Structures are given as structure tokens and as C-alpha cells.
Length: 81
Image 1 (cartoon, rainbow, N blue to C red):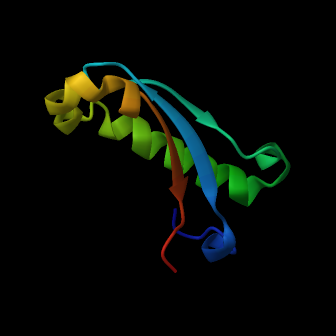
Image 2 (cartoon, rainbow, N blue to C red):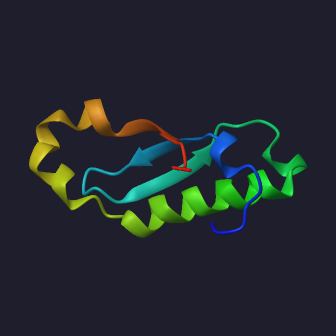
């Protein structure tokens, strides 16, 4: 998000669980202390919203036979600065 101080130093890690149809079942933040820093919390919530907004991941439907390989994904967000 615009205006977040030290955004280039913030890395957000999210564990995403997907259903077979590509819809996001859950998007859990793996960073422990994100509640302690308002700027980091802003980054975390922005990353989570991006994941939820991208749901469903339609391209994954073509790989339904490989569902066990992509149903649980860890994604790392590093903002370009």
C-alpha cells in the first residue's frame, strides 16, 4: 500500500490452503508479531486481500490430478521498492 514506511524491508509470508476448484479456503499469516507494528499489519492485510481477491485460481483446475501438490502453498510477498 502507498505510504507504508519501510515497505521495502517488509516480507510477508502467508500459508494458503486451496480447494480442488482453485478457491482459497484459508490464508493464514505466518509472521508472528505482525500485530505489534501498524505498518507491517497494513502490509499483511494488503497481501491477504490480494490472495483472496485472486481467488479462485482458475488455472489450477487444469491440474486437478496434482491437487495434493498445490492444495497447501506458502507464498512470500516482497514489495518492489
